[in-house]
Structure formats: C-alpha cells, structure tokens
Amino acid sequence: MRIVIVGGVAAGMSAAARARRHDESAEIVVLERGPEVSFANCGLPYHVSGEIADADALLLHPPASLRAALNLDVRCGHEVSAIEPDGRTVTVVSVAGADTLSYDALVLTPGASALRPPLPGLDSDRVSTLRTVADAVGLRARVDDGARRAVVLGAGYIGLEAAEAFHHAGLEVDVVEMAAHVLPPLERELAHLLDAELRRLGIRVHAGIAAERIEPGAEEDVVVLADGSRVPADVIVLSVGVRPDTAFAVDAGLAHERGAIVVDDRGRTSIPGIWAAGDATVSVDAVTGARRPIALAGPANRAGRLIADDIFGHGAGRPIPTGLGTAVVRVGSLTAAMTGANRATLDGAGIAHHTLHLHPNQHAGYFPGASPVHLIVHVAADDSRILGAQAVGAEGVDKRIDVFATAIRAGLTAMDLIDLDLAYSPPYGQAKDAVNLTGMVAENVAEGRLRLWYAADLDAVAASSLILDVRTPAEFASGHIPGALNIAHTELRARIDEVHAAAAGRPVRVLCAAGVRANIAHRILVGNGLDSASLSGGIQTLRHWYGAEIDRILTPDTTTEGARA
Image: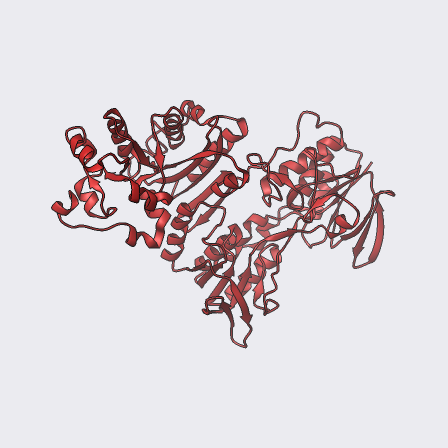
C-alpha cells in the first residue's frame, strides 16, 4: 500500500507517523514543497527575538531521522502541481523536472499561504512574512545587521508575536491593524488591556487604520497610512491573514468553499481515496456551526492522526472534533487566551446568550504577587451551556482557558463549573477559583437572583435609570459616572429611603469596582421592591470598554462632600 502525503509540518507528519504505526509494510511518501518537512512554526517569532538563539532548534525532524525512525520516504523540494483522481496519481515537480506518482491513499495537508493585499510597494526587499524557518532566519539577520525600526502589518496572533519579538530585540516597533483593535477575535474590553501593554512597552499601535502604500527608499522604507501618517521602517512584516494553498486540489475537482477543501468528520474529501486536514480545510465551529479554516497547530496534529486511523479502518469511534479555536498569545507581561465563540460570532449566529465579566485574582489575595485574571465568559441563555471564554492577565490565564476549553468540549453547563475540584494552594489559586466563581455568577443569572447591565449600554441607562455606585466615598471620588448616587454597600440598608427618593420610580442600575459588592447591593434593592440590575464587571470593565474615552465617562471628585452627592 502506498500512502502519499502532500505537505509536512503538523497535519502531514502526524498522519505519516500514525500510518507507520498502523502498518510496517506500507510505503509512505511525504512530498514537501519547502526545504523543511518538520519544523516548529509556532516558535519562529522567538528566534527573531533571540529567545531561541539557534535556528536549528526549530528543525524538529530532518528527513534522515524520519527515515531511520519511521521508514518514511520524505522528499523536500517536491511540489504537487496536479491530481488525477481517476488514475490515482499526482504530478510532482522538483529540480529534476516533473514526475508522476501513484497512490492508494492520498492525504492533502498543503497548509496556507500569506495573504498579499494589492498594496503598492509590497514587493520591497524589506518586506517579509513570518511563516517559515527561512523567514525567521532572514528577519533575525536584519536585526543583527542593525535594523532599528520595524513595522508589523496586522495585529493578529503572528503580528503581535512579531511585534513583541522586535521589541525584545531592541527595535522601535509600529503595529498597523485595520480592525478597530489589536487581536480582533478578542473582545473589545480585553483588547484594550493588550493595547495598553503594547504602548507601555513603547510599541506604537495604529488601530482602525489601513496601510495605503509602502514607499521603498535607499536607506529605509516608509509605510504610509490611510490617515496620512508616515512610518519609517528598516524591516516590515506582513501578517494580515492567510488563504488555503489549494489551487491544485480545486483544479482536481475536490469540493471546496472559498478555496478551503471540504471534508467530513473523518477527513475524507468529496473524492474517494483522498483525505485532507489542517489550514487548507473547512472546519466546523463547535459552538456556532460556522464553516471556516482554523489555522492552529493542535487541531491539525490531531486531525492528521485521525485520518491515518480512518485510512486503516481504525477510526469508527473517533471522528475529527469540531473546532473551538483555543489559542493563547504573550504580549509583554500579559497573556491573552480564548476558546469557543466570541460576542460577534454569537450575535452573527443568532445565539441568545449572557456575558459575564469577572476580575478575580489568579491566586489567594493575601499571598504576595496576587494579580487579576480579567475574564469574559459567554453562557447560553436557554440552557446555560458555556459558549466561549476569554481572559487576559499576568498569570494563570492559560490554566483557566484550558479548563473552559475542556468544559465546552465535555458539554458542561456553566453551573457545572461550580463543582469542579480544581487544585488549590495560596501560591496557585483560590478556594473559589476563577472558574468556580464563573459558575456561581452564571447560576445567579440563570435563576434570576442577578440581573446584569453592560458598559455598552451606559448612555441609555444613564438617561432612564438611577445609577447607584456602592463603592466607598474615596473610590467614588477617584472617578464616577456623573449624576450617580454614592452609597457604600455597607450603608445601603440604613439609607434605602434615599434610594427610593432618588429613583423616583425609575429603575436602579448598581455598580461597584468589579461586581461583587454590586451583587450584594442588588439583592438588598430587590428585597426592597426596586427594579435593580448590576453592571457586569463593574468599573473595571467600564474602564476597559471605553479605553481612551474613559475620561469623558468618569468624573473625578476630590472632595468627600462631592463624592457623597
């Protein structure tokens, strides 16, 4: 039996290794267009930064070791240009010319190529992508040769990693992102934290602005932005997205959607004998059902393994799972991570949901070094299924998002989180972990003990409701919503008549710093016959939502009398 695999790295090499374990006698041929068949593409930015000093550390398995360990016939520098499904052959082009290779099973894992928008000047020698070891080596060489200024076009995962890498290497860095904020899949209020961290590092962020052209020069290039800004650059990284690298597969008649190969839950394409996996395939979102490629190494690895199982008839009980898009990125001193759906995709799919904002510490507050994990969790309105979670913080972010990813895959409801028995010790967590607390808040919302209002609705709320701020007078004086009534939550029962008088029949919308005290106040207000709701995430979330605009939202007042007015 001959298995031909087109493309290496994550999905292709996983399929090849698994296939060998199934059948020692099979002939397994891996055709890789590039010079390396197995490399750590996720580690590339860290060679640019110098954190991974030796580029050879990125080369996981050269062809010789793959032949010795797994008896794989790995052919680098071999590009498949055509598939002939009826005859079960592929046309392969190399420096030796074109050749035809037959197959019994064909696995397509060609990956994706960088999008190249129609930007004048993009062919400058100073412009590079960051997708191969050669790219990383070339960018590191520019750093070592004295590059002083870098511009990164695109602030997705790779763009942010590239920006951080250049900063770590000592360059001045500008990041240009056409979307409204960096890392567009991240919720707006969390993206503000990354924006602030980038600026703290000295990285200049141009969000909501497109690059208009690149003007090459003898000493440096200039990136011209749509707002007229001119940004000089010694090196430019293009990271505005990818497209499936599938022209040869589309020409062969494989079903596709916008160039991505359509596969079933076993990785089978529309043509018998051909499987596909990785960045070049359509993935079904586990939460919304949306169909799109997911360019992540973990899912690609697992899909390649399961395809090998299916080829050898061992995959009856193991379909390729639908995608959650779980991802994590480091930005300076912060970590951002997410899993499942965000607000925009849920709204687009018409899925009714509640959004919870929490700011618990990553470990016990009394243990030195406590810092918040800023957490957003989306919960289905009908059955409290967990739909998505995102977090930003200095520590403990990846741990919590991994728990949420597991919970979504297991089909747990938000209330199930209350009972998760998570590891606790003061240096590592809290007795009520952030994940447990999320379940408790979700339960209160689901059972009607807590109603939420949101930072996005502030203008409408201020026009129709009494805003009650239950922080201390000193906190109130540091910045408050104009017109808000300040009564500390510990005084609320004794001063409930003041609330009735100030509300004058209007709803009461209560807030505190992070939501905990407001929940206590909410129950007091409801118990006294008032229409109440609590601001999700409190003033912290309000600040994150409005970002640079917060000065027009919150008014400082340095007098105690003014604070209590």
